[in-house]
Length: 324
Image (tube, rainbow, N blue to C red; front, side, top):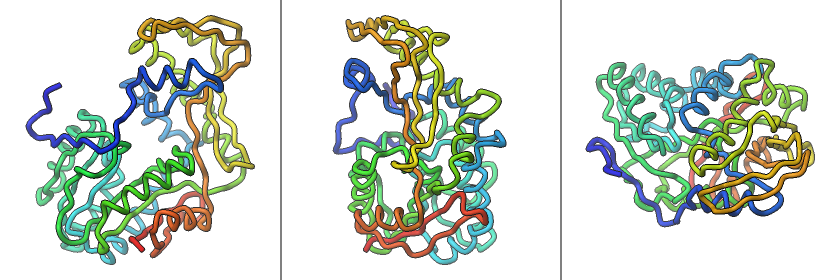
């Protein structure tokens, strides 16, 4: 694929498995699973935007509120020459920090790093119109491949990893990703990390089982992605959404569950497999943290927590950290 002129393609040092490889590993062996990054085709991305607006799904609102109330303090403390956002998506929450920059008369550049070229272009169009002073770079790539080839500007960089995405990684993968970030950063850089907090299971279960059924549709849509891209024959009405908080592991576990015994054919893999009634495919975990467990996670990757910003109800937090 030819990369548009206004993108910089980022290739990492780690080879990323293809969908075919992920499906072969995850679907043809038990327990079955598929990585959550495949949720986000056009339909899935649209559904997720709608989920973020539901009354039950609090993380997006809480994080936005924290950035709104503390953005000036963060920018004034860090004084970055550049803001690098990992998995930037729409860059909508980043506007709270850019608003703070504008109010303080501090004008850093902004590097948006995402796997979706469409999301990067839409964000640049919107931000160019709103912040005429902003110099914005578009970095197209998958951060799972590492940060070896991500440009690093001289001076203090503020690295954003928002949206509680860290919770979608198991502990080993989260530490590895944070270690990769640590190796990329200079001693003067800062990391601003969003994470969802441990709380009452009723609140958590409601957030992933909204009354409108949007999360259910979002979850089941990953089967349609497999149908479209792998010529599979999943029949969505033969599966149901499941999302439940595992208090022992402190994580939401999201799955699609077979409602009947069925045989799935995946033409691109030249394979088929049988699923029994009530058999599951895990589609996502969403780990929840206390401030102590997050501090421990960051310390394993050689970060020190400088300050923690939390919503008044302590549903969500942002940790500001620097390399130890």
